[in-house]
Structures are given as structure tokens and as C-alpha cells.
Image 1: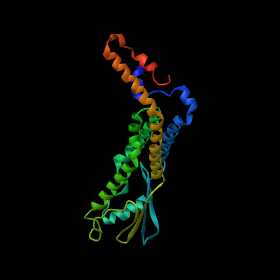
Image 2: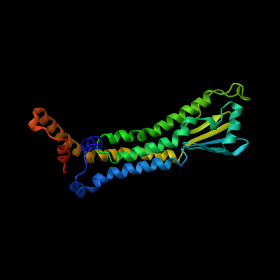
Image 3: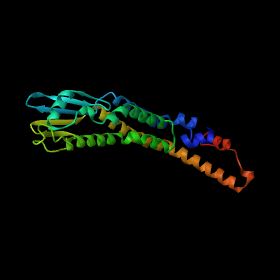
Image 4: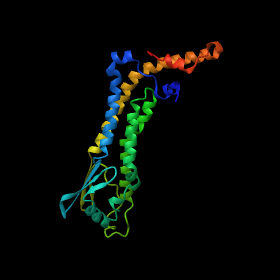
Length: 247
């Protein structure tokens, strides 16, 4: 990759003098985006969603925790109860998403980390998947809850007593003699915190690097105009790179 191509892809470098005088200006977006990437990575190991089911025969309730790649807790007992109303096993939900989730989240976190070395608008594009990830998770979770609740097995023992329904994404719900409580958990909140950090980090990123980028683009336009005027004004791309702001 040539120096000019590197500048186009990664943006202008911070002059040493500016870095010494305004160190926190350029360090802030790196720290914020780096912390966001770390929170996303840590969220892989924590539950995103909890479900508690209460029934007369289970006074203490049955609990299931949803991680991005597995379901843990009283899953077998809940599946037995769900069988009576015609609902499929929790273990069979979102198999594709769960099989790819860890790799996808780690990849998204690495994209955010890569944004720390990009000093142009490409940084926002790199961080976009992580920014919208919490909404995508909620959308996928709602899809599976609706899919399970609206497609009950008509041959189930209690199929006549339970009509198709949509289990709640949050809060309380009631299914026949069973009551449920659904709540978001630590992993999801870390993903949301990462999105907030990304928004703040991109604000400081734009504030720090936009002036450098505008000055470099101004130099680029001047060189292009000179090249159009004739061969006497032609310059090599190394000359342009040497004249980037503050170098």
C-alpha cells in the first residue's frame, strides 16, 4: 500500500506537536472506542436475557438464562411444561444465531477496535455494527418468542386450553396457570453501554480529526488543480504525503 492510499484509507496522521499539546483530544476517542470493544467482548461470557416461570408445582419458580450462544438453567423442566401447551424446546431456538454468535461478536468488537486507528469517516462505518447490535439482538429475540408462541402444536395435551400468544420480551406474562417474568441481563446492558461509548467516542473522534482531514483534503484539491494546469505543476504522490498537515 502506498503512502497516499494509506492516507485515503486511514486518514491523516496526528502531527507530533499537536499530539504533545492536545494529547487527551486524540487519546479520548481511542480510549472510548477501545473500552466499547472490551465491553462487547466481555458480554459474550454473560447472560443477555432471563426467564422465570412459576407454576403451582414449582413455587420457587423455574429459571432459564439466555447467553448469545447457549441456554442454561432449568431448561429441561421448562421444556416439559412447554410440551403440554405445544411449544417447542428452548434448546431448538435460534440455532444458527447461537452457532455464529461468538465469532460475530468478537468480529464486531475487532471492527470497533480497528476504528481507533482510522482518522476519517470510515471509523463510523466500522463501529456501526456494534452500535446497532443491541437492537438487532432484541429484534431476533422477539422474532423467536413470537415464532414459538404463535406456532403451538395443535396435538399437544393442552392445545385446546391455550390459544397462540406472544411471550413478553420484558415484564410479567401469564400462560394458563403459569406466570412468567422476563428481564434483560448483564450481557445485554454491557452491549448497550458499548453503544453509548461508541456514540460518545465518535463525537470526540470527529472533533479531533475533522480539522486535520479538512486541511489534508484542501491540500489534495490544490495538488489536483496544479496537475490539471500542466506537466510543470505535476507532483509525485510522495510530495502530497509529505505536505499533510503538521508533518
